[in-house]
Length: 149
Image 1 (spheres, rainbow, N blue to C red):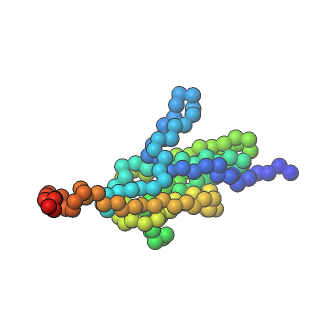
Image 2: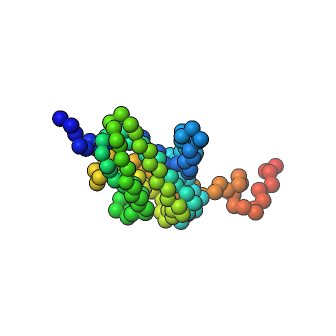
Image 3: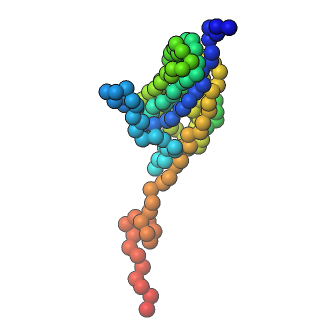
């Protein structure tokens, strides 16, 4: 049997600040993101990249990457790209670039990766609101009480 199409496996998917390619073709992922820690909301991320590597497939495909809000239905961003695997022993690397992504609320956002409308992976991206630390002794600008005698 000669297959005309084999849906590929998602070998890896990473959210990062940037992806660069060296002269030899290798990729460098910069700032792999596990969570987004911010002092206030809303906040805008200048650039987010989703690095996906596909393997063990054969044929023409469409990759879709979605960034969803905490309610799991609000579409924050979406990217779609066509790619091909000419042999099951090859791989394809796709990088989705999202510029000026605004996070309006704290909570668990989700990254979804699909190929030809089949969900291959869904992973959390936690946006955490961490207010700036107050100086020891209370509010800014206040002086500590004198020592007790």
